[in-house]
Structure formats: C-alpha cells, structure tokens
Amino acid sequence: MTQIGVRPIDGPEGLPDIFGEPKPPAPPAEPGEAEGEEPVPVAPDLSQARSLLTELVPAGMGEVLVTDIWARPEPKKPPKADDEPVDRQRLWELRQEMRDLGLLKERPIVTYDARVEQYWGQVKDAREQAPTALMDPYSELVMLFAGVDLENMAELRRNAQEYGREADSLLCLGRAYMAIGKFKGARQVFQAAAKAEPQHPDVWWHLGVTNVITRANRDAARALENAVDQSPGDFRAEMGLGLARYHLRDYEGAEQCFRRLAGNEGLRASARSMLACSLRMQHKWDNARVELKFLGQSSGGDWPAVADQCVDCVERGEQKKEGPLRRRRRIQQMLKTLAAAAGGGIWVAYARAENLFRDQAPYAAIPLFLAALVLVRGLRGISGREMPGEFGNAEQGLPCWQTTTWMKPRRSEF
Picture 1 (tube, helix red, strand yellow):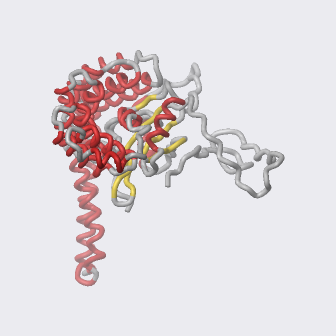
Picture 2 (cartoon, helix red, strand yellow; picture 1 turned 60 degrees about the horizontal axis):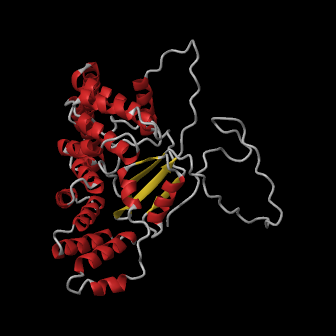
C-alpha cells in the first residue's frame, strides 16, 4: 500500500548529522504512553511545501500515478566578499555527477499514489494546505477527480442503458472507474460515451485525459482537439491538448496551446514554463529566454527559481548546438568511443591468443557486449544529440518537463 508520511533526513539518535550539529536524544515518553509502543506518526506540515509533482512510475507489470510533495531547500549562505563568482553550469554538472553515482539523496516529504481510492482527495487536500506551492498540470488533473461518488456505480450502469441518459451516466461511471484506478476500463467507458453523444465536450476531455494517463498520446491529442473545437477557450481542454502534443514531441503544436494559456500565476505560470521548454526544444533560444524573463517576474511560489534553472538549460542547449560546449563534449565523446573500441580490440586479441572463444565463448563475449554498448552510446554523443541527463533538474523539488517519466518512462520494477 501507499507509504505516507515524513521521511527523516537526520542521522541516528544521538549521533551527529552530516550537515549539522549532533542530534539530541529523543524526549521521554509523555505520561500515559505505554512503554515499548511506537509513537503515532505526526502529520507533516505542508503549508510551506515547495511543489506538488505528479508522475507515472513503474509498479509491478504496469504503472501507477504518484504525487510527491517536496519541501523547500535549506536557505543558502550569503556569499563572502572574497568568494569567487559562482559558476552555475559547473554546479549543475557536479549535481548530475552525484546523481549518476547515487550520492545525491532526493526524497519528498510526502508521497501519495493511486493504489488507494483516497489518493485523489489526498492531493487536493495537500494543495489546499500549500496554496503557494508550485503545481504541475498533472497534479491539477488528479485534483479534478477528487470527491467522486463511488456508492452508485450499479445505478450508473443501469442508467447507461436507458435512451437519452447514456452519455451523462457513462461519464459519471468513467469518473468512478478513474477514482478506483481502472484507467483502461474508464477509457472504454468514455469511448462509449463519446459514441453516444459526439457533441459533448466534457466527454471528449475525460477521454483525452484518460488517454494521457495511459500513454495513448495520439488518441489523447485527437480527443482533446474535439474538446477544444466544441468548447473554445476551455482552459482544461487547451492544457490537456498541450500536454498530449508535448508528449508526442510535437513542440510546435504544444507551443500554440501553451502560448494561449501562459501567465505568471498558478497553472498559467506552469503553462509559461512549458511554453519556454517547447521553444527551447525547437532551438528558439531567444524566444525561450523572453518567456523565462516573464516567468522570473512571478510573485507566487518558486517560479523565479524555475526560470533560473531553465535559463541555464537554454544556455547549455545553445552552447551544445552552436558553441564551444558542443566541441568540448564531442571531443570527450570521441575519446570515450576510441577507448571503448580499443578495449574491445585488445580483448579480441587476448581472446584469440588464449582460445577463450573456443573454450568459454559465452563468458568471453560479455566484455565485447559491454564495449559495444559504450561504443554505441559514444557515437550517439558524437552526433551532437542531447542525452537524457542534459536538461534542467538543478534543484530538488523544481519541475523539469524533459526529465519526468511522462517523457522518459522508467523500466518496470517487476
């Protein structure tokens, strides 16, 4: 089941924390508490949460919706007069190296997931407790399914068979399926509702959202285009269509949607952030910087920090495509590729000399397979194509649209 609660970051009791003073021993038990009993976990204070971010993560043989609530980082120490200027790009590179080595521990304070029916309401409650927190569009989609009535599902099934009531009853039934985690069943119900009433924009919106969650992005784009056509100016439909196009890497189409929604507060700030990312992925560097400059003027939440992160990402992208960073990284990749090829050649010579391929062929082929993987990855880097870890993600709790599982699904844990 879902693990909900505060995740500790301090060292063991009585031992010094690696980042601070020794942790004092636990206070004595309150009068009336039975000795030996575990204390009741205290609900975390979410009022100062930094962000609510929702993704699909592997679970068994499928995926599950998970919403992480991130805390604000510790305040940075003001620089001293004799300190050297901070190289933000170098700090980002060090952070990526620590993440790749597994030395960077990033854990949210609370995690909710859709394996429990209360999930949708939990996300909504968290949002109400943290009104200034950054929230991505996916968390907004989750909130819209809070409070669904699950008591009358049998009645809804009966009403769906009555003439003239099919679409509305199927719509409510599909929402109930969503609330209990039956996404594919909900998609089938919404498809039946759209067939029964093709001029029902709310049905098309629900069908599109369900397709987004089940990664049927082409079907999602078609359904949400119908929703936008039938209900022009609907914020939900425009945002959903922008997400579907973004997932399809149709960045020009996503740009058109996000441009109509962009602003500096709430979900409009999120739309502006995704607009800037869509421009960046089209190599429209200056246009992306203009949007990020507007985003940096936002007075709500940590959107200025997101803008700073994205400006650095734009700078890296431009340098890799057109500047010295491209040449430096291509040289590094060429050296790595040559080293992999040389290692493979040395192993082949050694194997031939020792007749390993004849006596122990399966074991002798393993190093060649690893060398081939390094070689392929190196050739990809030489081509100038951006690698998965070269985008934003500069600080814990800040959204980076290119590094989410919506764009780069993780492998199943099964």
